[in-house]
Length: 181
Image (cartoon, rainbow, N blue to C red; front, side):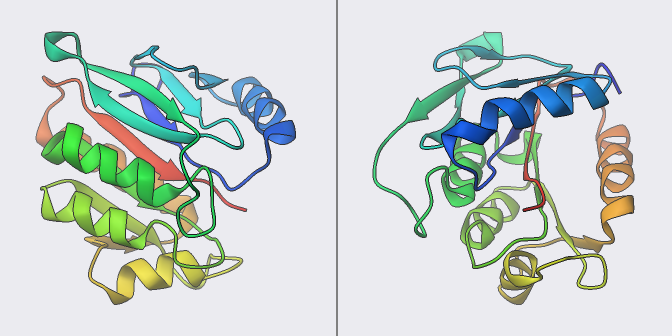
C-alpha cells in the first residue's frame, strides 16, 4: 500500500543498472521507488534501492524515525551492496520494528544478517524453494534458522502485511529485503 513502512532493497546489481531498476519499479508500484541517497530520511510510502557499488544501511534518527547511510567500504560476501550489511544494520537500528525478506539468489549473502534480525525480534521470511529461480540465498537463511516464515514469492507481501497489521503501525518500522536476481 502507498502508506507502507519504508522499504530498503539490497540487490546484487552494478551501478549502471540500479537507477534504471528503481525507475522501472517506480512505474509499477503504488509507492515511490528510487535509488537511495546518503543521509536521506527513510519515509513511509517509499522504497529505496541500494546504488550499485554502495552498501545500504539504515540508521536511527532519534525521534524522527530512520535514515539511510551509504558506504563504499569493502565488499561483504563478495558483494557491494551486501544484503548482510543491510540486514545487520536493520537489526541494530530497528530490531523488533523491522521486517526482513530474502528472495531468490545465488550464494549465502543475507543469511547471517537475517538471523541477526530474527534474534533482535524482527519478523523474517524467506522465499520457498518451489518459487525460487535460484534457492541459494533463501536456503542458506532457512538452514541456519534465520527465517521465521517460508513462503512462495506470491505470498510474501501478504505475509508481511498480515504481520504488520497484527503488530500495529504505531512505530516507524523498516522493511528490508532483497529482490530477485
